[in-house]
Each structure stands twice: as C-alpha cells, then as structure tokens.
Length: 284
Image 1 (cartoon, rainbow, N blue to C red):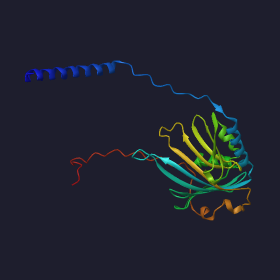
Image 2 (image 1 turned 90 degrees about the horizontal axis):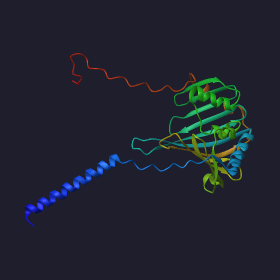
Image 3 (image 1 turned 180 degrees about the vertical axis):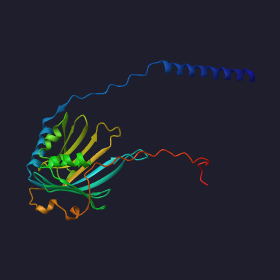
Image 4 (image 1 turned 45 degrees about the vertical axis):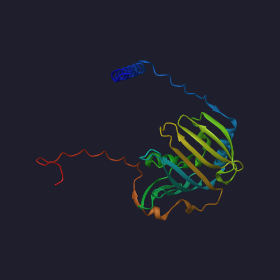
C-alpha cells in the first residue's frame, strides 16, 4: 500500500467518523428526551398501631402535672464544601402545668435561659447579661406562641409540653406506620414509628413500657438539602414536687432590659463607592 493511498484512507475514515459523530449529535438534539420515570405517589394511610402509640405517649405527657427532662438537639447546616455541618444544643426542661416552664440551654453557641412563672416570662442571655421581660400568657401553649411570635423563640420539644401533644402532631397528619423495636436508643426497649404530613417526615422512638419519647428525627419536605434534625430525650421525671422559685431567676431579672423582638435581618450590603474625583481608587 502506497503512503499516499494509506494517508487518503486515513483521511476518509476520519471524515466518515466526523460525519457520523455530527449525525449522532444532530439526532440527539432533535430526538425527544426519554420520559422520566413516574414518581410513586403513596395514598395517605394511618396505621392503627402507630396512631395508638402516638396517642399513648401524648396521654402520658398530658397527664403529668409536672415534668423534667433533658433534650439534646442536633441539627445540620450547609457547609461551603457541600456536606452539612452538625451543631448540638442541650436543654434542661422543667414544666408545671398549666402555666409554668423553664428552659436552660447550653451547647454549640451562646447559652440561653427562659423562665415563665405564670405571671412574667423572661428570655435571658447570661453571656451578654441581656433580658427581655413581658407579661406571661395564662397557659404554656399561649406562652410558647407568644415567645415565637414576638421574638422567634422556638423549642423543638414544644410538641411534648403543650396541653395536647397528639393534637399538635395530628394536625395535617397523612401517613403513620409502625417500624419495629429497638433495644439501643435511650438504654431501654423502644417502639419505632414514622409519621409524615405534607411538610415534615418524622421518625420517633417511644419507650415500650413507659410510653415516653426517647428520640425524634425530622426532615422537612420543602428543604431541598434534606437536612436532618435529631432530638434525644432522657432523664425523664414526672409529677415531681417543684418549688416556686424554680421558674424565676434573680440574675435574669437584674439583667439589662431589652424588648421582646424578633431578630433583625442582616442589613443589605452597602453599594461600592466610586473613587473621589481625580483619584484612581488604587491604594497609594
């Protein structure tokens, strides 16, 4: 085979390959994309066993005239690298129905304290010695709502200390099912269940014998990152005697007063200022 013929054959093959690639690219542009697989839509279903467990733990909590427990909450926040970072807080919670509660929170961030003695509620930042004081609503439910509405104060265990925990959970509930038992969480045998609404998916571990919640995991359905929130519950004490001073604090009452108010949003970035006339804007 002559060198010229071989070169011509290589050029022909190259041209044919190029034409084929161009044809394939054009076909890909003009052809319709394959249909996306159908998304399975589950019909709402509430399994009786799961609902019975939710009602049992709600009844146990609602019947307690006083309670104390520890809540360790872990929540994820996005990082610059993509995978989320985890932050953790620990809250010591004390409740006396119908109108008193206290939350002492420490952890990854500044400590906070909240007191409601049935007459006055105080949100205290001990590190800054700042306190917001307001008249307390007549019930714990109303105080939790007032704290959130006026100052964006929210506790992930709120559903456990309101007058009717199941009523809060059942609002919008569409799915609930029993998973099985665990002998790991909380150091006791627990029944695992999951429930969901249009806004949140929750898995809960409930003590098989005492019906007290031991762990809760939640993912919010409108969160594209599917960040996870986890709460471990321990050191449960029900119907204990609580002295009146439990729900007040002299340190908080003597802090520097500020208003109950929602945190201000960050100010918008200032526009870049043009260099003064006759200047280049470069450092001298």
